[in-house]
Length: 570
Image 1: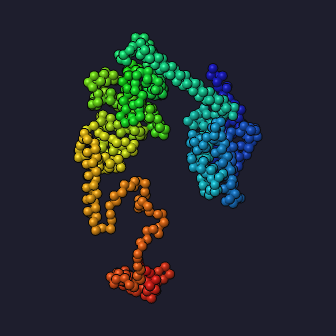
Image 2: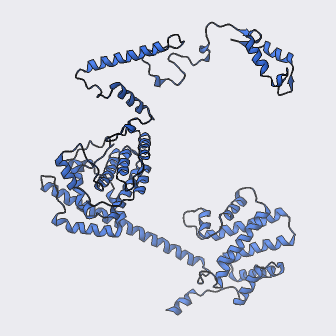
Image 3: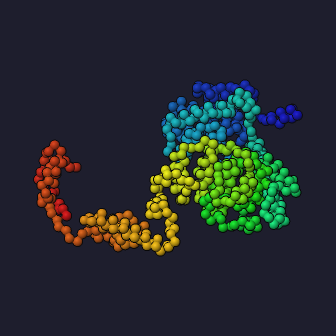
């Protein structure tokens, strides 16, 4: 077998023996122009024997060495040398990266990076073809670097001195075979992925069918756990999760599974109208119990971490497209998992029986060491209407909580960004005196001050409440008018929607600037103004001199008087 493999690797070369190869290599990289010319002649002979199959690296090396020989001969001027170097460098980049191009064109910088070719060499090629020609200094530097690359990546490896002694000259046919093999491998991998995706969907759909059948058989929507006839199915899903848990979570988060359709919610007797304002989302109890057998079976720290990570990724994708229903259930499952991990959260809006059922219907019981910093970053990267609530859950349950002031500021900024009115369960006096950032915060604070701590319109007679508010408003207006007495300003008592007018404009004002002119006015010259103004003007002249410097030179006293006589004050 070894003989056959070695015979298969043999191919015809143009040089007579290894000694000729060593001699050409030594002469090419010598600084003697005569020796380099001899090496170029031998390569010309090789090209005659190779015909159109000359190795690309050999041709590029010969082109660049020829540039150096002509440069040392001083037979060409600078512009001619730049064009000569440019042609050799452009051919090098194009020929070396050409065989890496597939059916779809890829950037030269990426292909050159894969071959460890410096990026600035590709930029030099770009300058030659599209922009202003570079200087001769850069051409010589590029030629030197490329020749070093060719010696390291091609010539040295032919002698077995490189990192891969089996690296050999590959013909176009062999490279085409490699490309075809790579495409076949990619196609096989894609087919396997599609088959795995199809299997995951079939397993989850089978689970749903079994559960819906159990719902139909039982009038009470209370499922204690895995049924006897579902153990085999849960075992299949668990085995699939061990092989490709990431794919299983991706399928779980599709519509129709953990994100239910309206028909599924109606079948389970869940309310379909709870997703309109998902500020504090919760998974409906019947829907949670529907998936509980599967989630309890998949329960493991790695699965919980992966589930939370994927939930936040899907939530981030919804920032560009509005989908309240999907946002609600993704946020609700995040909230459910974090609440299962903590015993701090109490649901004051639940009865004792509901609390008991909620404790029984937990995905997992033992606390898991979650990656809190990663969760915090993922939560802030996926802003939605539920983000303040989810952020509050994460901050409250962190192993090493952030400072109180940092948490308060983070929650406040999150509420401002998501345009939601975040409210703590038990706000402290410091939190009540937070700075006002939004118009909604200002209105809320005004209402709080007007109510004096009492519920808004909490009296039995709402009309009396409204009249008392009007009296308070009148008192406030009278107080403002009293403060402005004797001032040219007056309080506007008209009910005007000021938000419809830009700053500095009043109702009825014309867009014509002349409307701002007063009706009666008188004029006076600068000489008629009070003496104090004249003295101030005199003091403003530097050094007390009577001359003022202008763009063209100095103004004397008579010039200044002429200017003053032409000015008028209103």
